[in-house]
Amino acid sequence: MGVSCSKHSIRVDPMTTYATLEDIENCMDNGWTDGLPVIPPYGSLVDAMLEAMGWQGSDSVGEIPDQNIVVRAEKAAATAVMAGCKTEYGPLLRALTEGLLDPKLNLSGVEVTTGGAAVLVIVSGPVVEQLGFEHETNALGANCRANATVGRFAQMMRYFCGRGGGVLQSHGTIGHPGRLSFCIAEHPKTEWGAYHTQYGLPETASAISLMSTEGPNSVNNHYGDTGTHILDTIGDALCHAGQTAWYYRSGGFVVVIPPDHMALVAKDFSREQALEYIYKNARRQTDELAELGRIAKNPIEFAEVAPGELRSPLKSREQLTFIECGSSGGRFSAIIPRWVGSTHAVCKEIKSV
Amino acid sequence: MTKATTNGPAYNPPAKQLTSCGDVSCELLVDPIPRPTPEAITVSLRPKVAKVTFVDHHKPNSRIIMEYTQSVLRKRGIEVEGEIFIKADASTRMPAAMLQSLSQERGLILCGISD
Image (cartoon, rainbow over all chains, first blue to last red; front, side, top):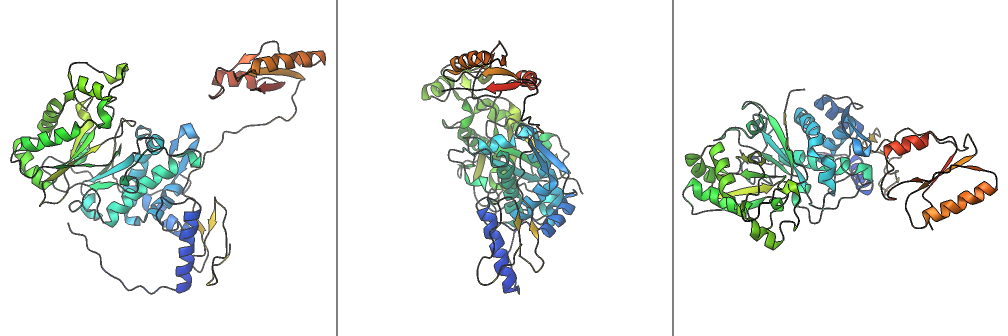
């Protein structure tokens, strides 16, 4: 799908323009920002967004109990306006808001961790084309309004809701660019079925899937000519010594496979077979990891450390999922390591409001 | 609420609520950040009975100071709870059961003295 930008000639009252710019600056000065300029959350815009999301402003849409925080719909709608979302994204944003505030995602933990994680939003199903998400060119960082603003909304919610109303501080050691926006859309037609089917939703559904992640690692293989070559390369990337996963193994990975690699892999493997292949073969010697300092000297029981054995960066198969997106013409895949502190992904169906 | 003019910024809004003049009709900007809702508390400025209960939170010399204070108060004829309650760590919350118990005291609670 191509996304084009067209130039419009807009006649603007200079008085209005200056005042609006001033409002943008006031939002920045008061901390109502992710660091980038925002659309000022004017009441009339927030009201329209609330209607699109199917909520009243005072509706409680989630809680962060440890911080005595109740998130009202008005806050989510204001954030959506500020991120630049269109009102037509309303039903998606509603599901996304519910997912972000699902306790399983541990939103506050994602925000304050030294791990510098972001919330990855995966959009799948018919909604991808309906709302114009980019799922081909630069799929992991698309210059497309739907991807950019929906991904930004998720990060702003993380930033606004995860710090106890400003009481807590973020402690990310290095973070990554996805903390500004990180939204991936899957191809509407896939070799292995829609992404959300890995979480039990029907193929025909539209869905958002959320998880906290580190930044993506590119996996380049231009000269392999079998599915095994590609999966072995991906598996090797999962096993580099610096992977956060090695000790606790409570996160997992998303494997991103674009068309050129998928053409090779799908010839030889079903999704289940690819999962099993990687789980079985992507391993590293436990003693070597311990020697490097990647495993605690006195490991806790949860870590299930077995000296002398090969160790998988996955504790269980369910921690590995596959998404099909990206453009053809380049033999790249990618892996996205999940943050170890939120052990669950959240997948929600998008329903009409 | 003031209107912006071409002469420069005309207002300096408070942190938690912004007013806007982005359009002819000024609008309120909606605060996107949820704030903690403190649990309802009541504060009694005057104890119902003249009795003092101490809680030692394990800061340096806390217990010595409390014991000395107990003796001074007793000499002045003020009733003092004999037991000094102990909170295990100054940096952590008081256990809920302990908080619940102390909240029933009708006198003055003194917690966390150190030098």
